[in-house]
Image (cartoon, rainbow, N blue to C red; front, side, top):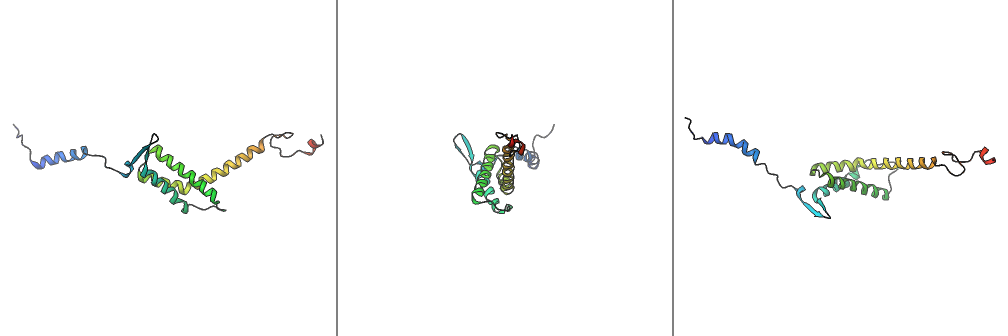
Length: 150
């Protein structure tokens, strides 16, 4: 028969890895600070880091020629803040990931919004120019001499 007694070193050799794997408990994190309001869970620290990331990236974002006016700068900043905060509420990223992505949104997102605004303005101008006006054909901006004499 075998000896049922187990030595202390063999006990620790067998059970330490099992103990380490089974005792993994989630640690408290600042991202666990959540306020429930209006039917939503608001991860306060993650939202704050996202806002700080967007706002901190604005001064280092590439400047346009000519630069945007104050009103347009504020509007672009608000759009980027809303986008970053909604992303955090929807996807619940970790603290570092939320901060880094928000810096990226703040840095390159401004250029993207400006480009998108220019494209929308050009599209609207093309759409208005393509509308048939009374007495004109679509795409025609003035009456031709033949149409004017008739």
